[in-house]
Length: 388
Ligand SMILES: [Zn+2]
Ligand SMILES: [Zn+2]
Image (cartoon, rainbow, N blue to C red):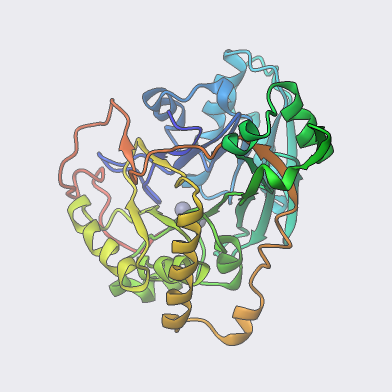
């Protein structure tokens, strides 16, 4: 199990299919567990994926269409059943406060939970800013109030064991050096900068139902892992715009312009059979030459490992993407987030996490997959999206 990974609980927009549960995502980020947009059936998907109620430390809802919140009653009730005692923050668009209240009280159970509700305003906001990460939001452009989320780890420094050993610094002295920035040794002074190297903080963004908008680019800026809805293929771009969604190609454009390192496509319309989703990957790849993951239920997608070489590779990729970018106006480009401004310096670690290079792996209890037909979709015919 990676320290930082996305566990995909569901990938269907609007209505589940036989192979795809309603939306749902769990981001494991060290000791934190962020549950995003629990659609219907999320409680059981958590069970299949090995995610427990106790691992959820924060819930983030982008908006109150059913595929993003119908799982909340079950998840909250399960958390109470399992006697989760710690405080859990629940963020959602402020305009949906009444909706959340109804969802929480939808069924009868002994509600012992300590939920700290964080209604998100219809403007850029910061929900948390601590030593582990900063959590930001931006309003998106959907048919109902919707927000996207961005998690930013502060930059820090990585201790270099060889340099420490060469100077005879061990044990508690290492901690002292980290705290105080210098330490006396052998009649001289060793500064922190001599035995450590800059460590770039990692970034994650979660962009669900939206049209192409500046906020999507801002949220995605410089991310290591970007989860982006791609409800429609590019061939259905008119539908996507009508119903407030992105095409896969637009998701690729966002990832390319933002310099994202790994793009997870998800929230697929039921109109596409699983075998037809390859076209969505091609649409995204036409705009973005980075790592693309076509999400499937119960996938585990690691946050890519950080390494100086990879930073350089990413920078080069970002430059290439910037040159090929054509979708955005110059004024929109100017509004992008200054990543340095959003990443205060703090935090320390000995070595970079050595996560798997693989784009994704699958949980063991993956449901059997088969081609989707209208029967697979529960008899729901292809048609314009409604409430997704
Ligand atoms: Zn929606
Ligand atoms: Zn949706």
